[in-house]
Image (tube, rainbow, N blue to C red; front, side, top):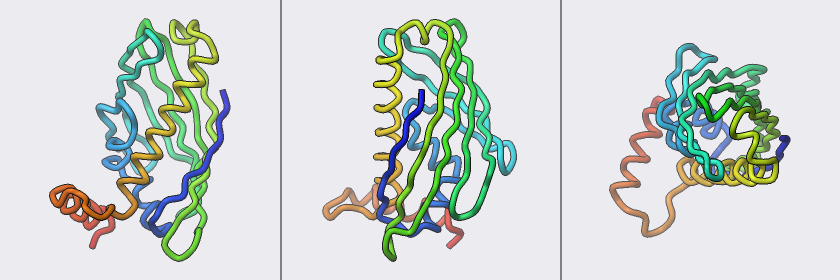
Length: 170
C-alpha cells in the first residue's frame, strides 16, 4: 500500500521539526500507541494496539529514523509483530517546507505492507484503516504543535506551554 498527503501546521518549521523528533509528541499523536521509547538518536521501541475491521492486536516493534536532513526531512521506518494477527512494516518520507513565516507544510509518502491474519481482511479495508489512522495522527499532531484556539481549556493550554518549553529547551 502506498499513500501520500500533506498537512499545513500553524507553527514554524523549527518547532515542527523538534516535535517530529520527540518521542513524547509522537506517542501522544500516534493512534493506539501505548509506548514509544528512544533507544538512541535514530532508534525507538514501540507498542501500539490497533483495530483493523474485526481484528484487534497489540503490535510491538522497532522504529528507525534515516536520511535525516534537519530541519527539512527524514525517513521513518518501522516493523512490528502482532502475534497471530500478523505483522506490519513500512516507511514514511516526511518533508517540511516553510509556508509563510509561522506555518509549515508537512508532506509525506508512506509505503506499508501487512501480512498474516490482518492481510486476509482485504486491501480495501486495510487502505481505509491506514488513511483513517494517518488522518488521526496528523490532526492530533497539528492540534498539539499549532496554537490554541480561543476559549481552550486553561489547564490544557498550560500543559502544552510547559511541554513545548521542555521540548524546545526554553
